Image 1 (tube, rainbow, N blue to C red):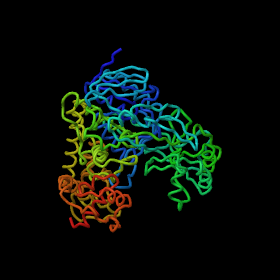
Image 2: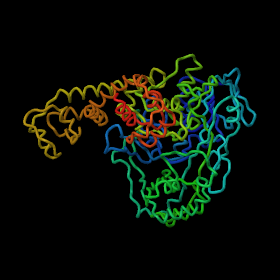
Image 3: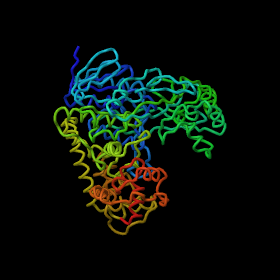
Image 4: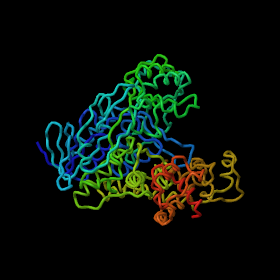
Length: 619
């Protein structure tokens, strides 16, 4: 049995899988150690990938050569582009996925990678010599040596599950917790903490009445996450929407005395923006209903994920309250919801490459760093795997800036701001979100992936071809004029001003009422437009409509470093700025930043909050 590798990845969740795959693709011999090989890349919570800001991250992972986008496409049962009614910076792809297929496809991808080996066991301790990582020891007594270790423990380190007053050890329902590593790292000088997350009940879809719910179908013309050629969905499964009501809330309140959230059993902090149902009705008592998303778990199962009903109340209260929700009168529960507490390590203890400051060649990725979400974990795993490989081969770290990727925003936030609550990515966390759109992730990052060795020459050639097509179409639109007799009927139909002479295509397309498909019947330009792919046309439209905003953000990115020269008095009273968000006032008052730059990197302080400060200080 081989016990020496270049790299060991501990944990086979979304972070661990991306880390192992990336490092192995770069040439490292990787050992992936997991406590359960039947649960590789298991979707512990909702069976979905992407969403607002998260979809951008999945596209970036794909553009960098990661696998999350490809696996999501192959296991998708529904695709939706969210926020189409808003600006292009907010457009976010999301898939509903077959939970079992997603896990199986990830395992197949890892097994097809000849540089990846796997072993089922729990890592109980790390081997460290002279503050340098040298290997791991497992619970069964096996010792494995390596030049580097990526630790991706998820919710398993000293995990504790709560259902009402019942509590028991576990990293997930029916899976045991991992022990030993936290205590070892704390003894070495690391700071650790506890976080909480939760999950809703799963129910039997055959017992639900969908006729009283709102159907939520996928896109009529579904797209995909991956920029590589992939299979587009021809058939989709619908989700449904229903709502809680006062009777549901009253029933849930009966269990509050037994709730670990309210009786002091749980002291750790849960996700601010994804609260449990009991937390919702407690914090937002003025609301008489909350939205519930009814999400299928796959193609060939009746199991349903009750999104929006995360809870750790006693099981009997969960069932009683759930059956008062429209459509759930006869619902049968497969397994109750629960909360889980677990260990994490404040990420301010990491370097920019996700390597720990105290121990050389030890990298952290995923929920161990205080994040929440598959997508946030996956991108950290990818970056940790890349950087672990680079480190042991004497190469410079691979780092993405805040203006290059949401991944850069996330890592910069974690290591510079830290987090005391589960960190979730939002578009509002990015100063340059019109630059960091989901449609241009390949243009931003694939050339970098090729330079690393994660993107093939064939893929780079496809990117070059795409860029050429974009430039060609954009130039054509900028240079071409359209006669009034061809365009005026469309302008009248769209409710915008007509023209009395030839008018630049670019200026017409800049109008908010018009989209590029509206010009496909215009004789002068129709034949040229039809030569181009729909996604290319869509991207060119974005570049033209948002040209001024894009240029402004590029200029802002160049000026970013100047923020660190703009000082703030240490004892400034932020409560006088009513335009600041409540979270920003709280964080700024506690941390007391000395510069605008430092303030901009505090978790929870958004770009709009920084704008308020700049205006107030006359900058």
